[in-house]
Length: 259
Image 1 (cartoon, rainbow, N blue to C red):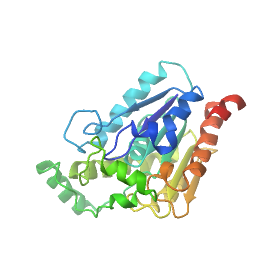
Image 2: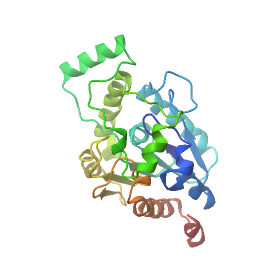
Image 3: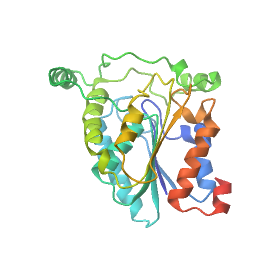
Image 4: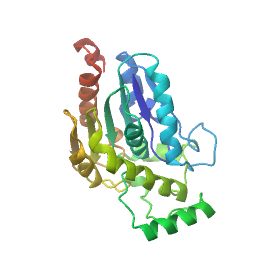
């Protein structure tokens, strides 16, 4: 099984006909895929784009516990904000996880206490207000203009700036990840494009440097943008994901060929 988590402003179904058709290719190889739309995203209820990432981590752990009742090998994949949710979930409870893939994960650094307190106060007053952060243009998410146009016209996308609640709760989850990643027992593959303007590509090698589980690795994608699985190097990145998934879910050669 694979537990798949989408990123900010998008939704799980994008991984069906976009993102290198990740979901169909997993299904075709006999891998069961579970994916949830974050609150405020896709087909989930809530104000568009507004989600408490701490709550998302709790929901992610709950979904995985339901998956583990199937008694099958399980691997977690998260993209962007979904990478942070996945990392936070693994930090909170790694039970039953055979491996983790983080694609362009959002990994904000520690914020000084006074600034964090001020941000927290603003969030309590106006949780849906835009965070005081530069917004990456949608045209920079990928080098493929067709994918950019499709996202801009997609009614299920949340076309909003990053809300304060997402920003502040991301800081809390990231703090737990930075302090707990060295204790992860399952291997992790982290991939990040060096030209990503949505999440910090410098944070991924720092996180990779904390990992001690054998088989963990960091894949820098030179010139890669944020949405790696439908950027110019999508098939190369998918090849690394496929090899990692096959290795850590114990897929035989015939199922690897289908994947």
